[in-house]
Image 1 (cartoon, rainbow, N blue to C red):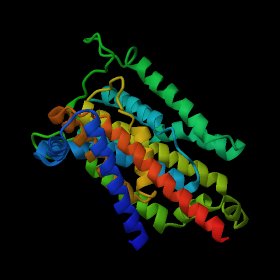
Image 2: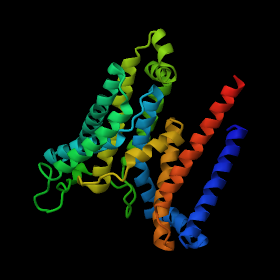
Image 3: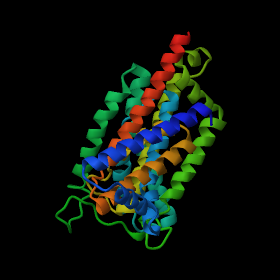
Image 4: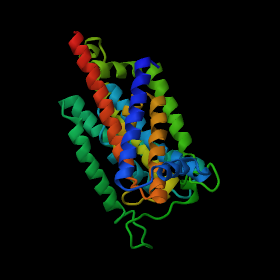
Length: 340
């Protein structure tokens, strides 16, 4: 790591600590108690450690999807909707084919979640590639559509008639992910997330198609003049990006909820944009930043229980991190223009 990057990282940490201290004092909390509660929340026992990775798994998968899109110039702000679509379709598969063995049903659910999540992302990807329409606006609108489609589904054809609440029936054992550590909620979804990170790394950095996609993200015109089919690569990146978000939806219903519920995601799709940004769109960076943000979320919730400090402080910290990163890129860009 370059010396200037280390200096910037230290400066960022100091700035965050100062802001955290100020926020805790504003709400009348005790700093020592709050920090103790934060760390006890993430490493206090094996259940808390497991919760960190339970939170990190969907962030990891959706963050990988955002990173793939960013590498090709497809800004995927529709991951939230793609996650919901993957969750809904996999729920239908889980309830319809509940008699299948786990070794068949789980991969089937993941495959279907990937396909339908990818197809949902293919809409803005195709419109961007063919008609040069802004994928940002289309993705955001599709998020609302997907979330409300799921809300309709859990009130109609996927609703459990035994409950008055908008939820689906519970999954069978063959449709749920196995628990890795007893007395925790940590499931095999974390393995799926790590395997996905390895596959994406190999595909994007070690294959000719991955080189084409990265080339399109750097300069579409130069790529086109070099004979690279830019539109195809943008469409492919949207399909992969949405597919990974769809798998995150499958993981959430099969590994955590064990049924489809309304409000399935606590904004995983939007938080994953920050995950990809912090991870510099690299699979290793995405994995690390997903775990870090999950630690922040779980620790903030524990801090609220032990010290009475609102857990919303984690959202403020994430916003501050984004602002600091944007400031860094602005300064770098300004210096380059000045030198030129």
